[in-house]
Length: 459
Image (cartoon, rainbow, N blue to C red; front, side, top):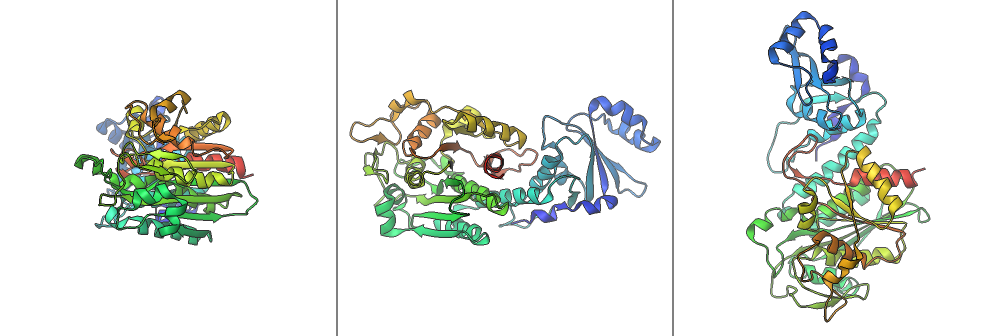
């Protein structure tokens, strides 16, 4: 994994750095009047007028960059991050109408990310001086966690099965002296039958990964992440086009590990627990079938309406375990439904909670962190859409409507005791590059969640 420390420098280097001056378009005429004649002529020749999203490198006599001008984009806090990829080698500093300097510094790091496990690329050479009054350590913690999430999601399933997902969780837990246990084999079948049945057809054994950190009497924060390392759809097999991105179906697990790393690295005063049901939804003679009925850990019986709706099954068992100790905050993150992408697209994950106070706080954190989220409803009348004639629940139901909401309601049935429960239906992928987000695996919602947890429990 890349080290973000190489991308964001200490403030002490400011005196030897190249200025990036951010200018609002309305201020350009006055600013231009203060430029020397050569720089003003160069700007005019290039047609630069500080339009949002435009930048201009001004050369010195020897041809090197003497300064950079950039049009301000206040509505896009990550916009300046793109300069990390397009500027020539050098050390730069931000000045002028930067807006949120913390987000600009983070965007610089995130833009410079690349996934280099299978081919060598030239590393980013444009470095940034950490802006004054920005907590460099916090920015680096966030960037390191996001890099880890992206690396995990970008890794193909051949190298990111349940074994490797467990190894990644062990590495995070070990780095912060968290206590980890793994449930496999007969113990998994007895205690977490839905996890067992979903994963039993794969030669890579299913398991439940469970680690805890922090003082036992601190507020209990439990994170549950969907760890489907590859999803064929099971016997209700996906078409080939539907499998192309199924390496990312463990994106929920990767995101909760990233969030856990941020919480532990910041030493937030919480009792953290992380639960990851790790499976591969494969096809074999012992694969689970449409029409099967299982009794879950919670005791609810579930009829299998579709083997391609397996994520909610493994999460149900993990949420039941999490709920048993009555956490103050219970969060699950999952690449759960295509319906969420139809509703909100790839950039905005929906979240579901019955707690209005938490929803409002999370919405504000999402805006402040430029980590977009949108609240969706636990619409109780839609419980009828996954009723079963022979069991307590059907994992898919017969209706094609409200897919994200019905999946959320299904999971809600496994949570009764948690003080606050939040479900995230994330995509964990950037299909088209944008500032701060190269194409590929992505962390979604974890910076907003970290801010919520820090603000609520960090004092």
